[in-house]
Image (cartoon, rainbow, N blue to C red):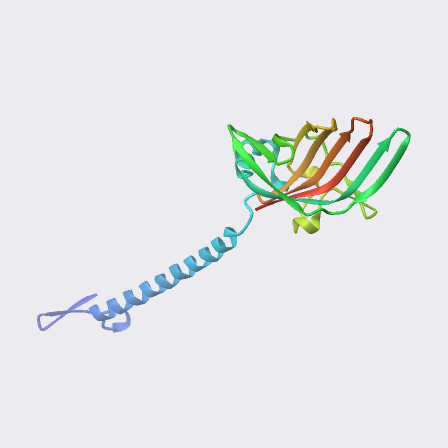
Length: 227
């Protein structure tokens, strides 16, 4: 309310408390400080969340379907990859004689994946370029016997245990063949499950037939880690 005294106007607040411009400005400053604190706290929370997401994977192989491959997955695969050759098993056959032997891990090699005209190509030093395709839904990764167990992923090398099995993950494959100068015919087939955009794992199969009729069949775990 307002009151007149001696021709001067003064403002009276609730309970007869006198309020003036200084009091109003003080109240505004308090309100602004409160809002400023709230904004800073919100910004801090957003930055914490953003900081956590910055290092997080964009893709989750357990949450992707075949429809996600062309436009979401394929472009993200382009780049340099370290291909780690894990343990496995080799079978050699010559006539009626057959021999099996374990294959130890054999380090890694570099490979490039190229995204071109909507398709992904694996550029392998020993086999050349092969198109990476989306695997059929019923084309499961066949496990490899390693240390008495059947395994289709090298968890130690990948450094991640997914929330689902490879049968529930987006799976890719590619294959290539070559004939060496000595007449040896080699076929390569790679089956991969996508864990995220930086990790793929699965099984590498190489079959060979020499000019003398000798046959080899080798299968090993393989891990692709982005370089």
